[in-house]
Amino acid sequence: MGGDMKIPIEIGGQSFRIRPPGGNEDRLRRAAAYVAEKIAAIERAGAISSHRSSILAALEITLELLAVHENPSNLSEEELLRARDQIDAVIAKIDSALTQSPD
Image (cartoon, rainbow, N blue to C red; front, side):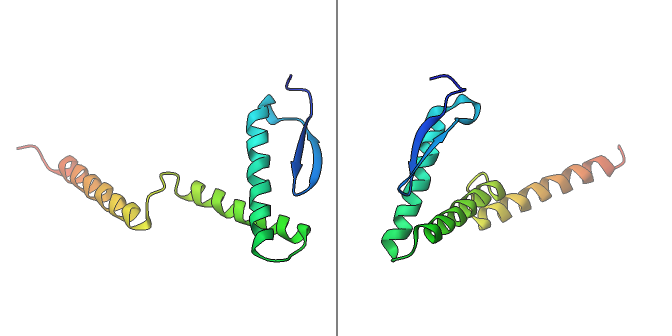
């Protein structure tokens, strides 16, 4: 399939024909499957409308995305703080070495 063709996608019992961004059909299908699974998991957890479950799935996916953007290395908060402390210590040593007068 070319990048200009729309492909059929089903999410939450709804059918769509969507043009894959950048022509990447596989990525679009994986994204649709991911969204569909999130909606299904929310619907299995309780009897709520498909509209409401879609909104909650979008919120959950957005929270996951923000977590990746805010911490792309997937380090724990403690590991990030330790790494920052180590970087600060190295910077302090470099600053100290640069400001010392030569012997």
